[in-house]
Image 1 (cartoon, helix red, strand yellow):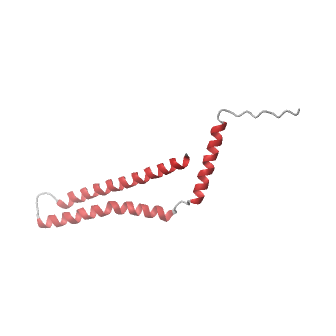
Image 2 (cartoon, rainbow, N blue to C red):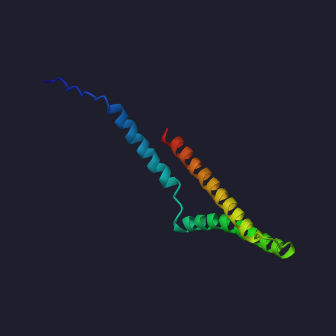
Image 3 (cartoon, one colour):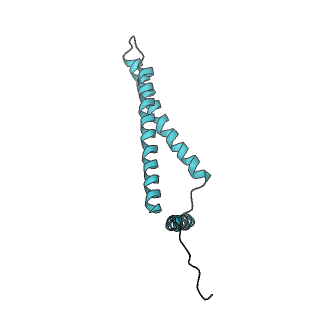
Length: 112
């Protein structure tokens, strides 16, 4: 009766402890680096919005100026406004993709 019962670890026992350790480390990291609040998210939406609006308005302003200086059969205003919109959307997409990539890399680094 003095024998101690053997504790058999299951195959997944080691991975379970690693998972618990990773979650604990993530929780400690989250406590050290609090996430930004609602105002930060609204600010980012505003930044993305302005990155689309500014090229669109610049294209429209240049188009109006060209239409007044060089009238023709096609509208410079409409064409340059659409080009500005496309450039603004591309710029916003590129910025969001870069931020997403950095967040994923940071998360992968912290999970290891």
